[in-house]
Every structure is written in structure tokens, then in C-alpha cells.
Length: 258
Image (cartoon, rainbow, N blue to C red; front, side, top):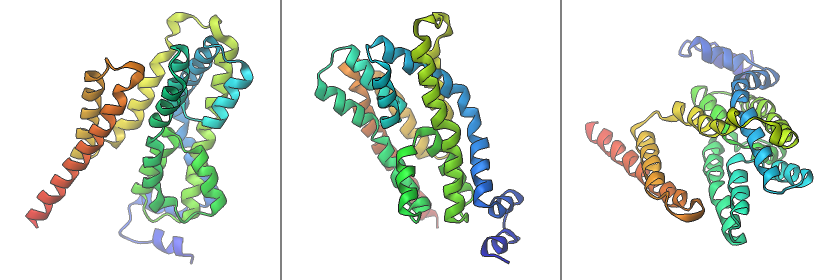
């Protein structure tokens, strides 16, 4: 009996955890793919919206495709194109796009305990394909099934990527080609807030998470008057500090009870 099969047979595991441990890496790819499919409902309009915005901003097809494939990060792509449209200074555009994508550094850090032992070539494509959807699905899956092997974890991540990243590129192309033929009443911009709500809501599991999210929302609204979206750069660190403080207080409180 293999090590994973022995773990799956443990009486301390739930039926769902046992099934997860028994999946082969190829089955994990399929499982991740299937679980990521619902995100297509928001990725399609989100990607189409970027194609429309990029076209209206004056980018040609090669520039839009290159931007999408190289960056592969919707929020920072929208930020950069919007600032280009507003004729913001180049330095502000670059700094803003990088700042919006700094969350990827935090994503990467939280994935190290789960994927840090992967082969170098796997870590390379994981770093490239790390997007909000692949991160949110994978980190929840890993925390729910902490005994998965590294190959099972990589397989699940690959499945989530295969279901989301190609859709983003295809949707962008559709938006670019269709452009002005898309009716205004389609309101494609609804996809952006819904996407992030769908990602964040399941992850608000502790008082620290809730406090950080609340401060981020309130801070973004208070500092919305700042130009070029700079209010987000003020709200983000305030939210992180709040989350860290609340978590420290909760740990101290729990420690005092023991």
C-alpha cells in the first residue's frame, strides 16, 4: 500500500479528505479544472471589458495581446490602461500597476508551505500563472486537505489554471474584436466587483480577515478623492496592519485562556 493510500485509510479523516488523498495527480488536474469552471461566468465579461477598454485606449491587437499574455493580471492591466487614458505620468502608471500587483507577492508567500517543494520548472510556471482565481481555489483546497502530496497539489493548481487563464485571453480577444458592437446596456463592468467578491467572501474566516476587509473598504472610500487611484495604496497597508493587530490580539487572548 502506498503512503497516500495509507493516509487515506486513516479513521481520523473525513470521507472527502480520504477521496482527495486517493486521487492521482492527473485526477487532481481534472478536479481543479472542474472546481474552477464557475469562474468563467465572471472571467468572460471581465476579459471582454478589458479588450474593449484597451481598444478604446488606442492599443492595437499586438499590444493588447502582448500586454495580456505577459502581465496576466486583470486588475493591474485595467489600472495601467485607465491611467494611460487619463494621460498620467509614466512613473505613476508603472508604480500603480506594480502596487496593484503586490498582492501576488503575498499570495506567493502564503503558497510556499504548500508548493515550495515543487520542482523548479513547476515553480516557474506556477509563478507566471498565479492569478486571483487560481490562488483562491488552491489555498482553500490545500488548507482543507493538508496531507496532499506535492504532485497532487501541483496537479490541482494546474487544473485551476487551465480553466481560467485561457478563458481570460480568449475573452480579451472577443472584447477587442467586437468592441463598439457590444451594447452599452450589457454593463460588462459588473464582472470586476463580482469577481473579487466571489474570491474574498469564502476567505473571510476569522475576525482578522473581516477586520482587514472592513478597513480596506472604508479606507478606499475615504481616500477615493486622491488622484490616479492612489487611495488604494493608503487603504491597503492600513488593512494589512489592522488584520495583523487583530490576529495578534486574538492569539494573545487565546493564549491567556490556556
